[in-house]
Amino acid sequence: EVQLVESGGGLVQPGRSMKLSCAASGFTFSNYGMAWVRQAPTKGLEWVATISYDGSSTYYRDSVKGRFTISRDNAKSTLYLQMNSLRSEDTATYYCTRVDYGPDYWGQGVMVTVSS
Amino acid sequence: DIQMTQSPSFLSASVGDRVTLSCKASQNINKYLAWYQQKLGEAPKLLIYNANSLQTGIPSRFSGSGSGTDFTLTISSLQPEDVATYFCLQHNSWWTFGGGTKLELK
Image 1 (cartoon, chains in turn orange, green):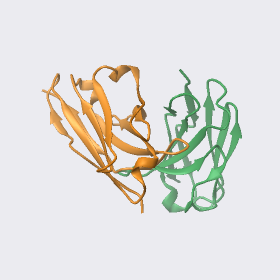
Image 2 (cartoon, rainbow over the protein chains, first blue to last red):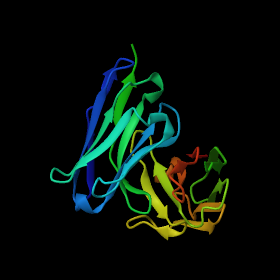
Image 3 (cartoon, rainbow over the protein chains, first blue to last red):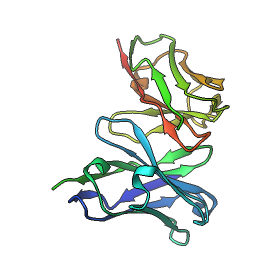
Image 4 (spheres, rainbow over the protein chains, first blue to last red):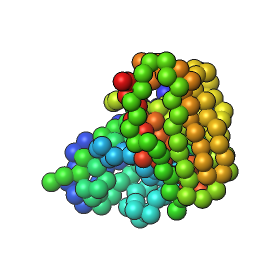
């Protein structure tokens, strides 16, 4: 059974940093691209970043370029999202997703609240 | 950027009804369209990929159709457990989600 479990969220002040993790199991992690998708409170879903199966290629939405870094450790079957210079508009639930014809499996999500 | 427009935003229907949800792309996305179901407090679940392919384990009352710019998700006979918000996603050029249709029981 495919499982994706996010961790690392919480309350953070504007301008500070936070790192999210996503532990994957139930499939061969190194065979799949992975992505982060977020959902602000009462809002729709928004793609954040994608990383290729081997980590050699990364892609970001414009609003997080230069502030967020997606990475992976295939030996640990873990996906990461390093978020720097956080803004109030980054407040959202962040979902880790496996990429196959778009996102197929999703984690339960982790809440990130950016507030002073 | 490709914009995805879903309609209606809210839909109220009765158990057993045939329900049709729409998703329109601002430009041609071929068949790179997926549908997701999201229940309150849960992660989205993939229902349909490549516009009309049913994801493994999803009941056959769900079906998808369309290509190019106009797409439809149909629930042939609405069940109580289908109460949820439904999102479409285009992955022809990056990813863009539709705004969602909230489906409720009448």
